[in-house]
Amino acid sequence: MDSPQARTVDIAILGGGLAGNLLARQLRRSLPGLSLALFERSRETSFKVGESTVEIASNYLIRRLGLSTYLYENQLPKNGLRFFFDTPEKNAAMVDMSEIGSRHLPVFPSFQIDRARIEADLMRMNLADGADIRTGARVHDLKLHEPEGPPESRNASGMHEFTVTEGDTSYPVRARWVVDASGRASAIARQKQLRVPADHPIAAVWGRFTGHVDMDDAGTPEWRARVHNTARVLSTNHFCYPGYWIWFIPLGRGVMSVGWVGEHKIFNDAMRKPEGFLEFLKTHRAPWDLLKDRAELIDVLAYKQLAYGTKQFFSGQDRWFLTGEAAAFTDPFYSPGSDFIALYNDFITDLITRDHAGETRAQIADRSATYDEFMQFRYQATLLLYRDLYPVLGSFELLKLKWDFDIACYYNLWAAPYWHDQHLDLRQLKSDLRRKDFVLQGLENFSRLFQKLEAGFREKGLWHRANLGRFACALEGVHFANELLAPRPRKQVMRTSETIFNATRARALDLLADLGEAPSSSERTLPLYEFLLPSPLA
Image 1 (cartoon, rainbow, N blue to C red):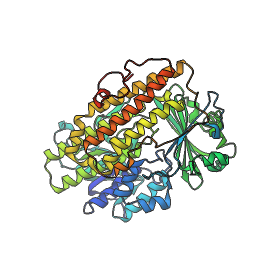
Image 2: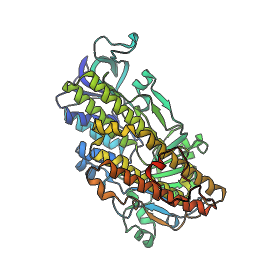
Image 3: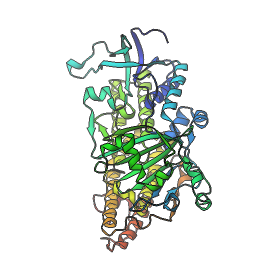
């Protein structure tokens, strides 16, 4: 690279992690005539969580960014999400645990990614594609140009301005568009006081291991045959307990990511240190059987609080944007982080493209506000999958019910529209947003139903009654998968939602009957609108 000097660029990306590098690639592919500079504080990429992708993110990586060959050659294909369940004493062998998982690689691809490796590779790709990549570059003294902001915050130049320090050298940068991809530090979120606490108190601890046991070589032939000898190790494996879960995610090249996520009341500071993390894992037979004393712990990291929101994601008319963890975060249980990156980056690229093409400030403002409202909706809907529901994780029966509901809704309401770019259709998006309160109410109703079941199971000591010896195919509830290959009319989406809701409620009523509770309504099938009203489902 040439020596640093004062510069003006069209697009500045602050942060060179996954979100920033993916956006840089997307913008270079979409707008090759615009200059782009990416500024990353670290000189080397590092181990981070967020290794597991799901179907929206994988579609984005393959279709939008053209990374299919790279992913299959340099990362690992993922065999879906997989869940194991234990005894109250946490002493079950893995082969005896009840299991939810796939019997073959899913039809819709996803990947396990080594974050440090993919970020380094993306930097090289972006540099080769004409992006100005600056590592060891600290961004500070950011001044946003906001024509309608308070006088003290306005930048008279019409450009965003900031200073970059590389070693002993500092230089000013001016940019027409600025994207904050700097992670939880988020310069723009701090400056504009955007960060919003989330009512979802969970913590996380994670590390990387080498020398671990091969899960697919550890069980009996009968246990391996139960999933048609598919590769369980390629799944995002969840060992589930009341209030927390332990993940095993393969990163390739002999490295396994192992982490714990759970409620604050279970977390303790000793787990932040290697010896404390290892001692905790040792109290769980099945996870520890995959590590034993031969596995070597490379590093340990932790977050005391994972979830948070933001007051605003984008200001297209003022030409600033947040992406990745600079914006918001919900929960890693279903691996939604990279899905959110796909949505952020699509919206940002679309807004910059339209702005560059000459759309009016009013048009950009309207579209930006709609995209922002959709991301707030998406954030709230995702948080409802987890908030107050961590106790459900410890029961095979309860999580199977919740999983079938969640995965079917994911494909029906979120994944399929993304695959057909309906999220970029302003008319479609505004129509969806007019119904958002009903969707959120429906999800809230099911959350309360799952909480009611969990309370009954806990009271009657039934949490663990089906946690051994059972197997359920993970996608058996997605009976409509073939319908998702083409855009569907709204009526079809609504009919599918009604089917999903009724199937879940019917099974929940059976479980309530096991608890000796008679539902307030004996109707086994309800019209869709009944699920979307603020009333109990049982």
